Length: 423
Image 1: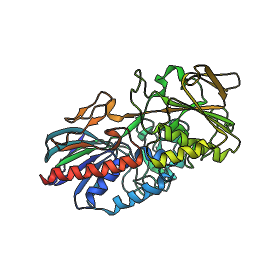
Image 2: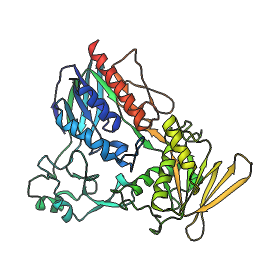
Image 3: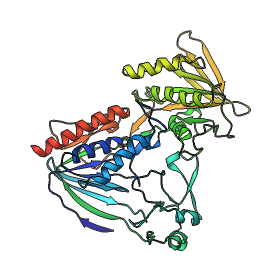
Image 4: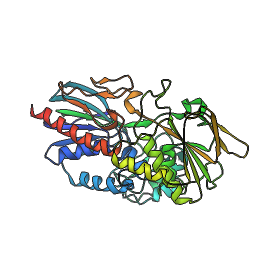
């Protein structure tokens, strides 16, 4: 494994994570003159926002905000972007860190024009994790048509490598390097912002809700991909089992959240996500009925409360207050949701064509602790120590948050990182 020594003055900042929080942090710092190293473990920037169909407050598609940020990054020489990169070790103290980063092979060099001729000849398919396994891509792929960087990536696990080589033969630009190896670089920085984001809670762990057992039980992030024009169905919301249009859909709130056996905290965004997704379905299928099973509906802020009231006025949307006890499949692939009505105390059930689990957000660091001297709470969120300084957590690495709150928090963490350099 090759090693490079890349040094920088300690007036630089490292941002770990290329989602919306990381992008905001990097841009805010770089655009006031600081050198920024942006580290992202995936092949492309954008994080979870890039997987959404629309996001609040204006219900914009991801291309609306991300495309502008990508352009700002591309035009700013102060930002050095590393994708397929993982922080291996952090040494030193506030104002003087030495960070070792592993750069994993893309197998595609900078000659790539994203023409797609390599994809046409690739004989191997892989499950598409960007779409949560709902479709497949070739072993050589890019996440979306607006991926940044705009280059293909080869899945090193799925690819047959030099024993196949058809993609390399088809490439007119000598962009494919099937023998590319990982390499290490060392970076010296003055402060670090961890914007490592979140993962959807693993719904297969919630035994009573049927995810993984029944095809027509999906998660809220899967619904986002179904509704997205660049998703597995090009934006057509259909039942996974048979591709039919759903005439009724149930949303199960707090699927794993506010549960001492799973995530004991409220994930903040789930209620609004379900309300938003109810509008996706109602816009596409005017006769479809929506049933929302909830413990409490939480709509933080005036705008969100106004949105909730608008959805509540829809005569085809029904709110059922009660914790869901069971989700089961009926003959004909119908899905029955059973809950105890918190108002009447009676058990209530509804059979629908599809069920959507509002699974909560779990910080990425909850599963894999970061290789740095950081303090976490019991749920895996990073606790900021502003007195100590040096390293900070932004966005959902610090607490559950929506896009607006994440952006605001990321701007603050950029300022904190700059203050460390000024001490």
